Amino acid sequence: MACAYGDLTPRLREHIADDGQLHVIDVLPIQLQNLKRKLPADRRISLIQRDSSALGFLDATYDRALVFFLLHEQPESVRRRTLAEACRVVKPGGKVIVVDYHRPDNWNPVRHPLRALLKKLEPYADDLWNNEIETYLPDDIKFANIEKKTYFGGLYQKIVLTR
Image (tube, rainbow, N blue to C red; front, side):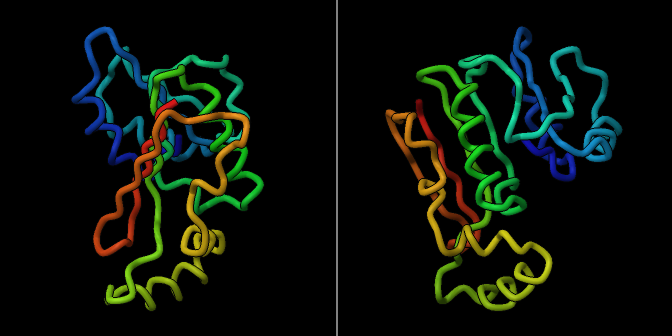
């Protein structure tokens, strides 16, 4: 979910099995058009315009879901629905991977300037500094495992939720 500027998908494409599929979901047609220009024709990749908080796919359809730098763009209510949707469409035993901002460590030199910039440009990003992503997960889904790693002095986080 969220192709951002479309630089990740060409890298993911290199890892798709011959019989695999990659569905890229974004709410903005312009983001999907931008991504399409960066990709060679590939029957394994589908670009789909959808709202991440109301995907419309059947339950347990996917082996994995990647929510890539999307949650900081969403108000809390939409963020909760997005995570609920990602978890709903992933099969039991599958994984939901979330990559987004995180509160940098106190010593991180970009901590204060970045926070000021994000408050101005990304008003919902501050939520990810003040709350763990786990607080936005649906209560009705139990996870076999939750693994969190942070990168670049806590600036970014990756959460792997195993259903």
